[in-house]
Length: 214
Image 1 (cartoon, rainbow, N blue to C red):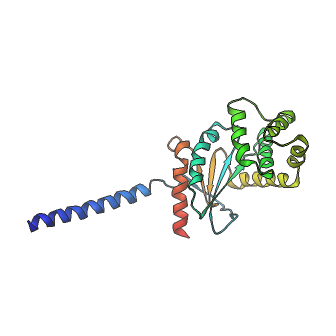
Image 2 (image 1 turned 90 degrees about the vertical axis):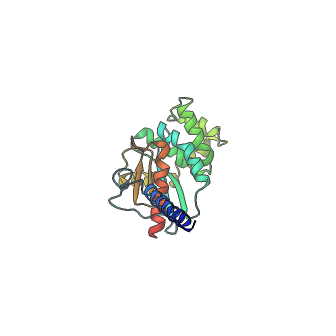
Image 3 (image 1 turned 180 degrees about the vertical axis):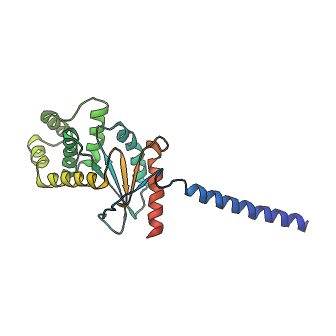
């Protein structure tokens, strides 16, 4: 009986060790150069006490639109030591117009309602959101009158936000969206191997990596 107990105990210990090894192997799923990139020139973050995650996106990008529902769920459980912000892409005039829409909505305190409204307008209603009248109508739907929209959209604050967004894109060498930058060090984008639905798994892995290194 004692021998049987010892065998069971040994087997139990072996099983625990195997589970621990498997758990560690699973935690190291994502590797540099394959699932994420290390930025050549790390950038400073807005709050050194937090691990910063920045999503570079475009209102007209269908992958960004698909990622949005995952992001909303993810943000609801974001740890206190993590901060999140969006940064709009600025490659061409159309994207700069959409970026202005985004930063105008932020300046008006309407980011939470403007983002889903803009995604819906572009992807479901097939509205390009580029003409002056169209944009005035869009903000009117958010409760902002024409004169206030025009004043805020051309304000110093919005212009400065556009310049900063453009600089971030160049500094991080963004070539596609959605791209997420973790703590100014790591760049994560969707690939054939890591689809839009798994990008945030890589982000969580890198957050933990940064947390352990701090």
